[in-house]
Length: 136
Image (cartoon, rainbow, N blue to C red; front, side, top):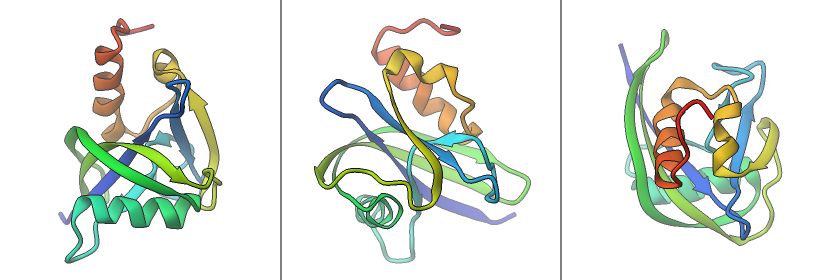
């Protein structure tokens, strides 16, 4: 089974809310929520890939910060290795070009969404850092 290396951005606004992106229904994992990002192209560094993907998918620019989580998840079509990074907006406002919906949520509310399985460890890490109890 092929492995796909992807990156995701944990973008937070001034209020500390996290940008969540719902996948389009015609895509793999359609309708589930994710941290925006995408595939790392050959020869790209993860941060470089994340800046490119956010520009393409959301039409804005970010500065990439520290790594949040890394997970590997076996989907029916591929094994996905996802690395998420903290990021902040430096130019523009996110606009859904490829996603069905964008939503800013407080960290405590992230668990209310139906996340793609590979994104769940990042949700758990963010909530643990914020002192949010599981199941809330």
